[in-house]
Image 1 (cartoon, rainbow, N blue to C red):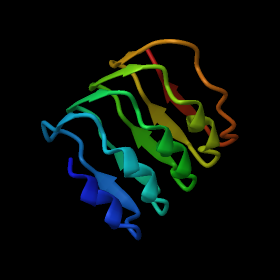
Image 2: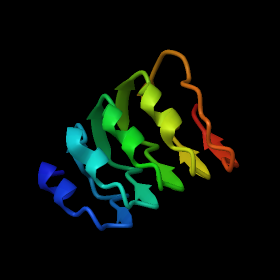
Image 3: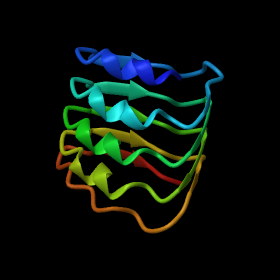
Length: 111
């Protein structure tokens, strides 16, 4: 995924599931501050989830399951206060779960 994706600052939905993407996510993914829905599931994304992900405060649906993300979930994920669904299962995350302050969260898969 090219880092130039971050120039699409008015984007509200980014649906990249089932595409065979690999490598880490661009570190500037947090520039997409208008996103409501981010679907990265069923690809080959790897490495750490960028801490800039916490800047996506309008995000309601976040699917990053079935990839190869590793390391801890960034603490900035706790800034996603509008999150309703988080699908992070079937990755290689480790460590403790950061505090999630999303009061509307009703679906969270982390295994």
